[in-house]
Image 1 (cartoon, one colour):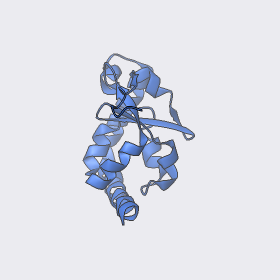
Image 2 (spheres, helix red, strand yellow; image 1 turned 180 degrees about the vertical axis):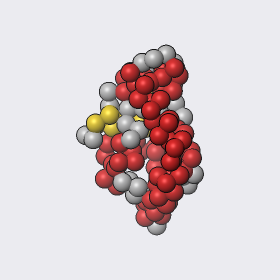
Image 3 (spheres, one colour; image 1 turned 60 degrees about the vertical axis):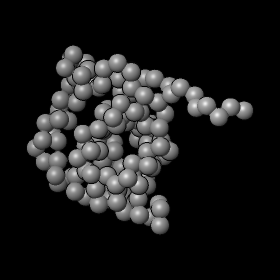
Image 4 (cartoon, one colour; image 1 turned 90 degrees about the vertical axis):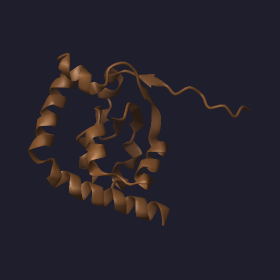
Length: 133
């Protein structure tokens, strides 16, 4: 038995993009890949918030919410690897199908993200409180 951690598995954007269904949800936050499928029902903001970013980079939305340290610590339970190469946002500029979806998502975020972000932040804080209380 060794105490040294193994090297995390690496994924490319195309690997992540296919995990975009309710029963199979991966997201990327800060180039780290998370399988959040089991967290959908527990997410205080509702599963729709996470499903909106399924198979894509959710870094901007996650950071814009202002998640607590407790919420960030919860991510460790869902970590499955790291993103290698270009981030999904860079892939969008290359014209991939995931990219066109991300472009629509970016427009959607800019047009009304505060209406979604505030409840999500509240929900994340509530989960963190219940998780560690």
